[in-house]
Image (cartoon, rainbow, N blue to C red; front, side, top):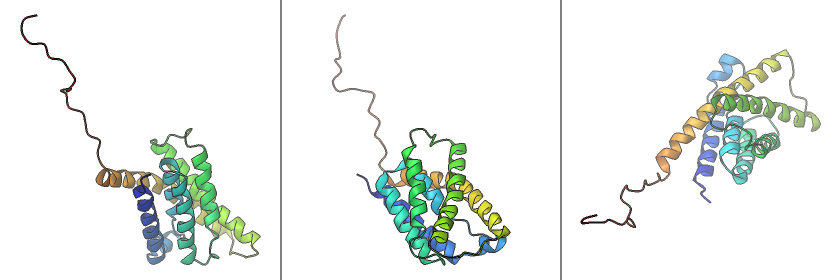
Length: 183
């Protein structure tokens, strides 16, 4: 098994969580911080195996919770459920279609905060909810939809740069018989 795609996904997830915590420009402009983890989960679910999905959900969720006010580990389960649902039906999905990527990214971007909210309410935590939360949820869903095709493009370029390219066979075959002379 090739672990390079999984390591690249985890590295991008770590960088994305760090940049979300460090740079607050979008948070101040839009009123919500766009999350890249659901878009990465869509990519991992459609292109990689089950190990990549579990590692991204576990590591990405813990990294995200360590830099937010969430209890540690509450983001892991919604990411994992989202990834497993997409992985389960990935044969039916058009993974190369940009429209399908946008729709799956929007669904994942909308489902992850709802799952986290559900877990927080069941844990007895009282998050701040109001009409502005609806705006934040819409921004997260739209951001997930916009970032998912960018994830596919980024990882396709990384794959082209770092993976071995297939060798094309030569036009001359060694097992071919050459008849010389007259007929």
